[in-house]
Structure formats: structure tokens, C-alpha cells
Length: 214
Image 1 (cartoon, rainbow, N blue to C red):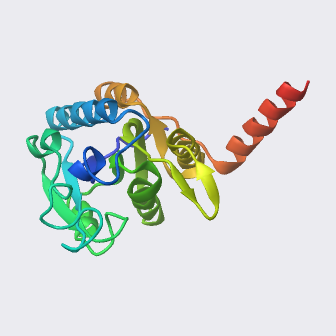
Image 2 (cartoon, helix red, strand yellow; image 1 turned 30 degrees about the vertical axis):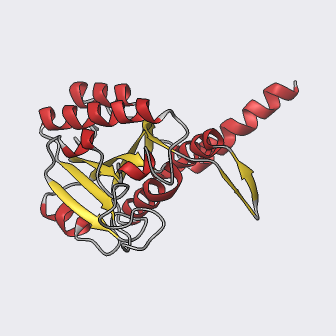
Image 3 (cartoon, rainbow, N blue to C red; image 1 turned 90 degrees about the horizontal axis):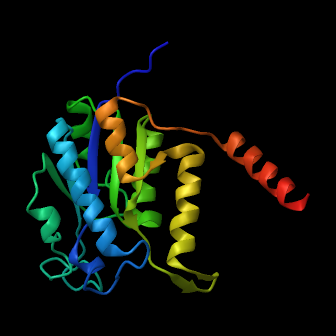
């Protein structure tokens, strides 16, 4: 049976100055690399007729980050100057929460959401899981996103650890995780990205552990 051709939209989440020169600067992958890939994905989507949605985090004017009207709140020029088909401001991590995104996707018959932007473990993850719970397919371009490191009461994790682990978890059920170039190949060739599940991911991990112990 032939797989149904996905009706994609590319969602560009929170590519704002805060992550480049502000109070929450992306550490891994290098932000210059992820920004380049975000631009490549936007250009390719536009050329292929895939709708592009830009999302802007909107916090109160006295907020510590993404304060409305501040430089950190502004969408980065590399995104702002490119074509987009829809634009939404959001107050919460998920691009679906308290926005008209769901209505827009339904109106345009979108069944697959390709996610790029920031941050991997926060707004991207929340949006992917919100899409999953709505019965949509999701794709996550791991080199067109990024994370920061955290240290708090629970411990310390580097940006690379956070980014890698979240990508593995997304691939285990919630999204097909691809590089930007892999995604570009899919939209040109019509090839479907690899999707996996929790049980197969667990079994492969057990096999790897057994092989290392042998």
C-alpha cells in the first residue's frame, strides 16, 4: 500500500534575538549553523509550495526574556525577511496554546508539521507533542534547532546532552527526526522519513547494551 503524501507545513518557532544576543543564548548546535538551516528549510518550503508559519514568543513588557517591544522579542532578521504564510504570537510554550494555529492548520488541510526553531526541549518539544495529541504527524529538523545548558535543583545537563536526548525521545514516538538535508531530500523525492516507536527503540537500546557488555 502506497503511503499517503503528507500535506506539510513548516513551523518556525521563536527565532528571536533573545536566543542570539539576549538573555538566553543558544549553545548547541552552534546557533549560526541552526540559523542557516532554518533559512534553507524556509526557502525550500516556499519553493515547494509548503506553507511556512512563523511563531513569536510574546511575554509581558516587564518580563526577563522576550519582553514585548524589546530587541530580544524581535524575530531575527534572517526569518523576518523571508516569506511566510501565517504568523502567530504565543504566550506559552506550545504554538497551539492560546493561538489560532490549530484552526489555520485545519482550514488548510495540514496533517504534517515540520518543526524548526528554538528551543529543542521547550517550545519545539511541547508543540510536537501537542500536534501528536491532535493526531498529526510531526517532523523535527535537529540541526535547525538548539538548546541551552541547565543547572538547577535537579542537577546539571549540557546543551548537547539536552538536545541529543530530546531528539532521541522525539524519534521514539512523537516525530520523525531528520537533518535539514534529509528533509530537503524527502520533499524533492517524495520519500517518507523514518518513523519508529517506543518498543523498537527500547529493543535496539537493549541490543546495544548487550553488544557493549559482550
